Image (cartoon, rainbow, N blue to C red):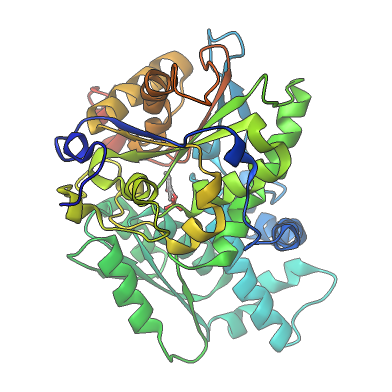
Length: 414
Ligand SMILES: *Cc1c(COP(=O)(O)O)cnc(C)c1O
């Protein structure tokens, strides 16, 4: 074990907070991923919306990957929830980054085979499908990324190979097999599973590997969400500023989803948004990386943590080095929360707001008290009790009753 300000707390399963010292650095976003790249991702999602609408037409949906910004009941507008738990197709935030990367692959194939026309819905037709069927997409996942890539990849007619680490829930694997995806189960953790999947895709013709640890397309797909939220905040008459900051709580696995959103938000609002990453105490890989501050991603096992958590979407032992390089400097705080707090908030949010969240998403709510405790009186930190708090609900609406009900302490029949 290495020396840290509070390694023992993490290893003992206690909530832990890391704060960046001083507000000045919060404006600094490195230029590794350019604004043009994010704009291109947003434009691609817009261009392909009619195709997604055609493939998932049962939903009466225009094909845009958007979610509501919800006022939390009884909070007087101080608590907002970004409802990505109910995103179309996948019911998780992966509909942004994961689907964007899939569309990059599809667009590339379509270009090479002269399948692109003014009408993108033609890509759902038999000629395009026959071409897509000769291509394969490989991905590793703790559950949601694989589920999303399998679901949308199969809808497009691609062959899909989904490598699942041991946390992945049985219902996601079953559902994927029903859709005709190949599911490869691994006994190991997420880092091992990514390495195995990367190896399996290596040198294969007509194969794309969606690399959760290194992909720019994932990051830019997530970053495109900043436009959407900016419009929604404006519609509510909110303009984030240093005097009136918005604290955004972002559940973090490898860091791609929260990293992309942070990139987009910081570029727009600078220090007006305070970006807080939230992890399980057992998998606090981003917290450890920032505490270490060497631009490298240490493994949680080296700090006495076991990476065993109820939050399957966040069960990652090592953060993405691409995310650290692209937005590490812009992360204001990381809160590691215990599993019990996630489950308690799942119940509370269900009872008070009727939102069906998975533990990974409920973690966002659990982080607020820890953050306020740590930030109160900390140098360079504003008072947060009067700030607006925005909880990014990253997944859960597709959880079957058999998964959800036991977690919130109800019989399945209820
Ligand atoms: C994937 C996921 C996250 C975190 O995304 P990373 O890119 O791994 O950091 C958070 N919540 C849910 C529900 C997810 O599926």
